[in-house]
Image (tube, rainbow over all chains, first blue to last red; front, side, top):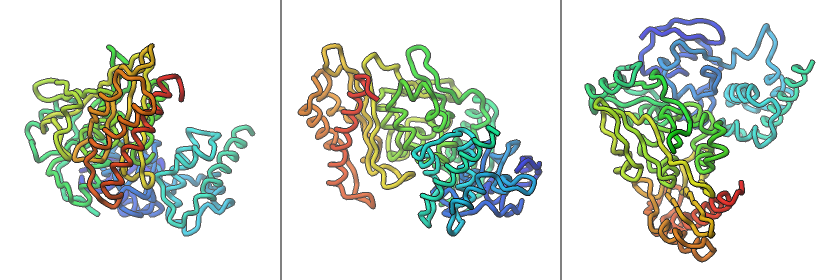
Length: 158
Length: 291
């Protein structure tokens, strides 16, 4: 099937088999390997991307379902050579250890901060509860998202 | 993991979809949120020859009160139910339920209709909807019919839907004044199926007795279980500790769990009793205006 979709603002037209999963289209056809495959069983959230702005597990969506829609991957966070404040916060707060879950955490965090600009810790933990960190580094991930929220609020106020 | 090959169909109207389903018969599966179906296809536990994607059909996602019912469109995403002000303020049992279904990422795609139509006794909406006395609307090539939830679940992963029918709407009778509900689930971790869970919905009369009681159980049998005898034990009585304890015991008696990784039979039955007590107490508290 020939489908058109937009990934990080760039238009693509690709031929896909209906059974091709979105994550394989992103990684293997479009060569955007920032999106990871973790469990491949809808548990871990490492493959999280935004589908029309909502974080979803791209191992559990067929590529054909993304036709005529907007995808955003972790590569889309950086703008004009500058990391997104959420990425800066993950560095500053040590929000990653091995880094495997990080692309998924960033995409979930990015979408969450778009809806909730002043979250408390419980809200952050609820929001990322579908993203697993096998290093169990949640404390710093939560701190990083809270710090990014503060940075984004400051930037909005400036 | 790669699913077996299939032919993909994307009808743009309900009529087109049911006609397709009627033609393809048992070889087709409906793709709604896909959050149960796609994992099964990846594990090759399901291998439909045809997928009929209903996501392109308009007007199947909504949450509104009309004609004495809360009406939920079959394609409504769980996350939209969770975000609905109407659900949060007026249907605490559904709000509790939607927040513990899988995880937030899955809920962005998973649909309320799919959660019921999949017929999985481990899913959470079936017990919640049974406790609320809900019915579903099924659309087929010959029109629509209404199916009470009490006759909807016919076996494990089996429902009263025929292969050419689509679950298009869930209807919950708008609860009377002084009603409250709660869903209490024990899960090992976020995203796991319930070890057990209990849904309770009560309406308390002006004299303090229970006028209507709904109690239903998740993942302790081959189908979702409506605990009729537990409901009857509370109905018409003043819900004191002794009455709640009796109902909790009857709910545990109604459970038919099997031993698995989540625990042995005795443990799960006892758990049903504990969760029933908690769910009924919380429902009563909310019926009295508590949160």
